[in-house]
Length: 143
Image (cartoon, rainbow, N blue to C red; front, side, top):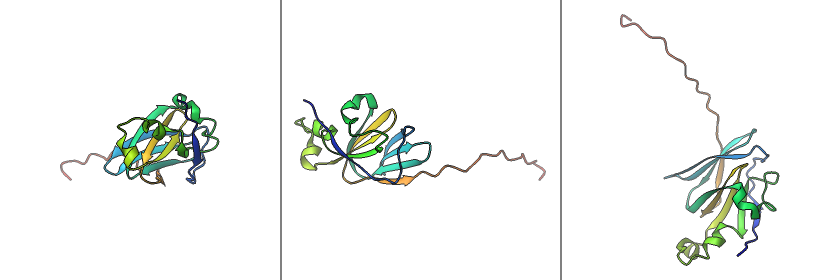
């Protein structure tokens, strides 16, 4: 069964380039956070409510590369031919039958993340840490 993906770019305000990478994927009580960075910016992509996610090497998603590449963008909404459509072929994929989740694909130079979500993600800038650790002088017991 061959799926031909149909996608659109999700406008994030952050232009991708060949340095764009997926740096971290973290699931917590706040949802799914994905840290994406390039030489120009670092962002956190948050999905508040998800049905599932998977992380694959870009080589395993060859059917997407005619539509999705880092010169076009890094965050895509998948309308057909993606992971959700593949999962819907399984009899016991209940989320797909009950909720019809939205699908997104976040691509990086190496790793890519497919996300089945309830809503669009929220993209925010990750501020670099300015905190530097400075040793404090030892104070004497007499002070």
